[in-house]
Image 1 (cartoon, rainbow, N blue to C red):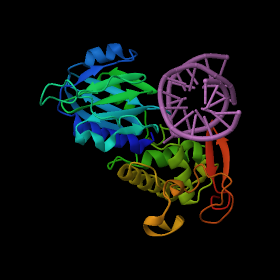
Image 2 (image 1 turned 135 degrees about the horizontal axis):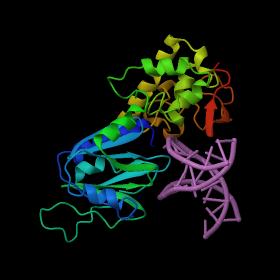
Image 3 (image 1 turned 120 degrees about the vertical axis):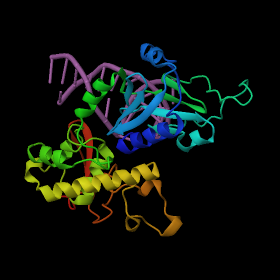
Image 4 (image 1 turned 135 degrees about the vertical axis):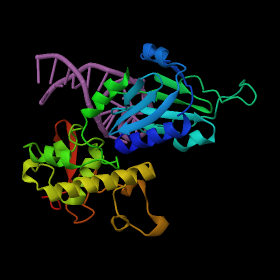
Amino acid sequence: MPEGHSVHRLARQFADCFVGQALSVSSPQGRFADGAAALDGAVLEAARAHGKQLFLDFAGDRVLRSHLGLYGAWSFGGTDRFRGASSIGAPRRIGEREAHDDGAPAGGPPLPPPPVGAVRVRLVGDEGWADLRGPALCVLESSAEAEAARGRLGPDPLDPHADPAPFVAAVRRSRRPVGALLMDQAVVAGVGNIFRAESLFRRGLDPMTPGRALGEPVLRELWAESAALMRTGVRLGRIVTTDPSDRPGTGEEQAWPEHAHLVYRRQGLPCRRCGTPVAAGELEGRTLFWCPSCQR
DNA sequence: CGGTTATGTATAG
DNA sequence: TATACCTAACCGC
């Protein structure tokens, strides 16, 4: 699920599997043909995430900057190392095929399967490959251009060196609802609709409260809450924001997927903490979920 | 099979 | 505020 935690996992996956290798780069779909041609054969030097954006730094001052948007995904295949994250992004079951290595040179790298669907970018390294489908953004830039783009984003709670001060200041100077500010990538980078709903619930904050009505301590707690939930997301590979006491049953008997969230997509169901029906509404074109009783 | 929905953002009006 | 973008899962028929 492409909120910030997914993209940080992607950066780690690229670092583990591709950094230091010269990659074959292609665009089977054709919509990134020029960029792919310019990158083909280049050595990947680093893989980084800031918020929901992925930065792949290639030798020669070339950066492949991408954003999965609502339905983009990277899928991986190859040797065992690549199976750790067969697909990261929108929910789908691709990248689970076996390596298509019939006809591969003995001892050589596994070959990727023929592209299925619209593969915007295919990267092939020594031991596997990665396919990008459906991205909202996929551009080849100089490092200066990529750095300028990164500078337009707010601090990322998943960055251990991030300073929350710009986030706190941006919220406190705005009349916009805190629920809208949390989704603004220039205010804080990496929070999406699920982390917004869940972190506001966990801090007991009404999403419609104007930013300027909130104090600095409350906002630092909100930052810390988001960071904690996002770190859990990185660790688990999915968003789980409920505590064990929020979930029915005990031990291993819990029915997990249905009990991963506190309010997100639970409209009409009783709040896990107080029983009041969870509310849903729209804010700036996105669905907002909250408990009218716990959040005020 | 077709309609709906989605973890997102840029752009137009 | 509306829409375009672009892909796949899900659901009802």
